[in-house]
Length: 198
Length: 255
Image (cartoon, rainbow over all chains, first blue to last red; front, side):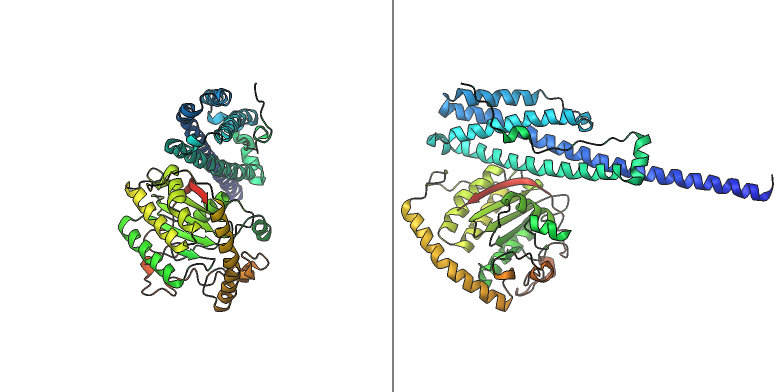
């Protein structure tokens, strides 16, 4: 083997090594972004959990003043139960269908809660009850947190998805098995008026 | 690109160097300095950071969205502690919000924040006492964080219905305040000392570079007697401030 062939081999090895390092760098970058999505998702779940935790207390308080409002109270309790039964593994993020289901169940609880608060308008005594006022402001605060965390989650997903789809990322992603993640959408369930049972 | 973003959302002013930020020119310099000094003194004691921002109009923007954006942009509170509170006030909309950092959510809960807004600040604002309301609100915030806040007694905590007389009074106040406010605004524009003055009608988006110059703010210690650098906060401020995180906790209210 002569000298120039050796130089050629070394050059190829060095080049391969550089390409591999470059690919690993991009892969790591995707991992970091994916991690950010998971973190934000945990926050989203936290705030939804926080809302669900408020429900029993709220229902009890309202019952004390407006026990006859059974329909809306039952609806809230049922929606709370179906939210509690949701499986929310990080796998949900890779499956737009599963995320939509999660979102719909949460929207149902949100809708039921807002109807409960509308109903409560008819009970001035309840509305001036300290305990209820505290719960109401906690609920409002939690709804606001949900909006904030959902927005941040979507930003993280957008960031990740963009890195995934653009050129060097898309190449690395295809053979490292990175998948596009689902966004929260403006829930169709929260817009349309829900069915009222009589 | 920045222009389209700015058109969709009310722009957040750059992080200020002070704690009392009056973009509406509604506080007198004396009131502002007094509140500022109190906040600075408290911050040295407790390390918690409370910042106030007074604006004219939301211009249709959502209060909650703007408030959390402002809190995140200004990074009120210390990094790692997230112990910041932002008190945002919109005079024309008669709306306010306490935005509470992650680290203070346990003591300054949504319920307590709502009570402060409803029972402490709003009654004073309704009487047109802006500086008083802010001062009382700041006291209440401090008490809440210390765990000593109680709902003011002697009146039901529910918001009383506004009786007709009060409504007429409010309209009268508004009727006199409006020309006065406009005069004040014109004057402020001349003197360029009262914070936000661009366009004469609140937020002007026509020329962000110049109109959003935020005269009078963002200058450490400017116009403040004995303004020391360690009393400032924000990106340029010392003392580890300017890294707090917010997650939408707090409460909104109107008056």
